[in-house]
Length: 174
Image 1: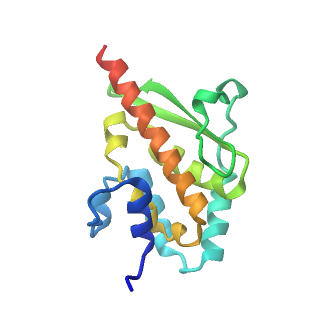
Image 2 (image 1 turned 135 degrees about the vertical axis):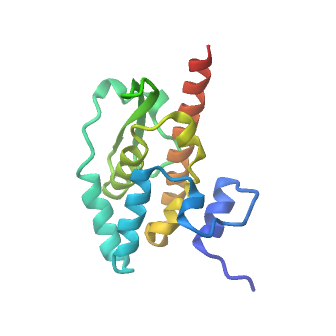
C-alpha cells in the first residue's frame, strides 16, 4: 500500500499534473518575504502546537480590512472560515506596478494563513506572484496539522490570489 504525504495531498487538490516536488526552497519561486517565513517555521521545533500558535500570533498582525472590500467578488469560496482577499495595485519606487494585498478571516488559524500570504506576497509584481508554487506551505510544517478542509481552503485562497493577478495583468496590457 502506498504511503501518502502532505505534498501528495497538495498535488492532488491543486491539480498539479507534475508529481515531482521541488527539492529545495529556491525551486518554489518564493518571494523573499515568503522565503523568510518558511525559514522561520523550519527553525521551530517540529511541533504542531508551537507552529499552530505561531500561525495564530501572525494572524493578530493582520491589518483590518475596510468593510467596503468585504464583498462577494473578494470572498474566497470553499473555505471553512469567511475569507476575503483584496488586491491594491500601486507603483513601487522603480515605477513598476506591484500588488499590496489586504485580507480578512473570521477564524484564528485561517487569519494567520491569510496573513502569511498577504504579507508574503505584498509589494511584488503580479507575474512574480503567479510563479509561486502553492505547495511551499508543506515546507513550513503547517500543512501537517491542517485538516483536509483547511488545506482545500488554503489552496482556494492561493487560487483567488492567482486569479486576481491574472486579471490585473490583462488589465495592464489594455
